Length: 330
Image (tube, rainbow, N blue to C red; front, top):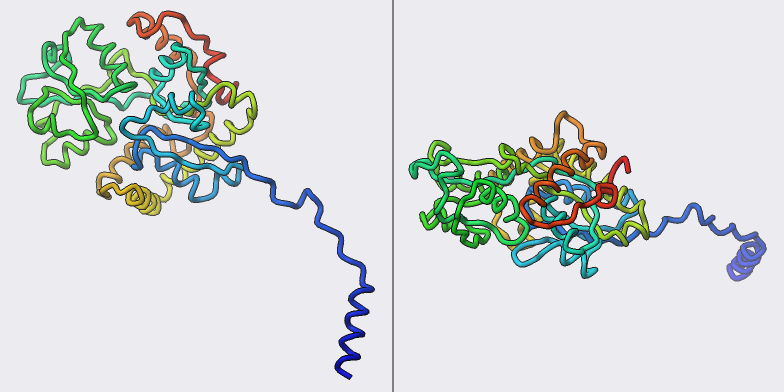
């Protein structure tokens, strides 16, 4: 009897019409693989990118994004030009210099509109003005981070002995140099954390000079943009969403930043990373919301910066705004 019932079940099942296959429109669309290289090792400076990845904002935009850390000896523009990465983060002055040198990179979103770069001296050394560094030793990072300081020194007709600076502030802490370069959201706080008081430091912000150049921007090769223009817009939109989420969920963001740092075998100081995240909020937000429209490269500022770079003989030929900038509202 059991065998007969089983046979009848099989016959009924075989006679039942098969359900039609799912329509193609209901299938999950394939994600576009992308590689994004940041400027430095994992830290809260890049929290928006980490949170956009963690919260799935890139995937929501159809992107399968791999984040690649920068660091000593890694030059983003070279990695872009060689095709090792699809998108990268650069300071505007450095990107213009590389563009003028023949690297066909374009700006697809200007995330940071002002400079956080600074020179830091000791108040006890009697250095109250940048000109007081004339003839002194100044520690500078290599490559693109030297553009603004060198332009400033040249404009003031200063002769400064430039000493290579690593990711350590040891030269300054041991009085081997009269000043060191740093970022407001990073090295300045590291010096305070080392035991120095604000009254002992004499900071000089590039934002207070004619060389207040925008910093973190998103770049790719022109050919990358031409192949798929929508990808850059989606990358920017998801990144903006990531930053907004990061600022609204500080503790969760700091947890993720710490995780990314630990994965890179970096020491984690939560107090320092909190300072960095809060300073990034100060830098990025003019009100409580961040949108892609806040990531526009201002044309008037662009033209003035190009003129400054030409005057300083960083390069000679003017760069066309419409050719170089391909971000929001373009």
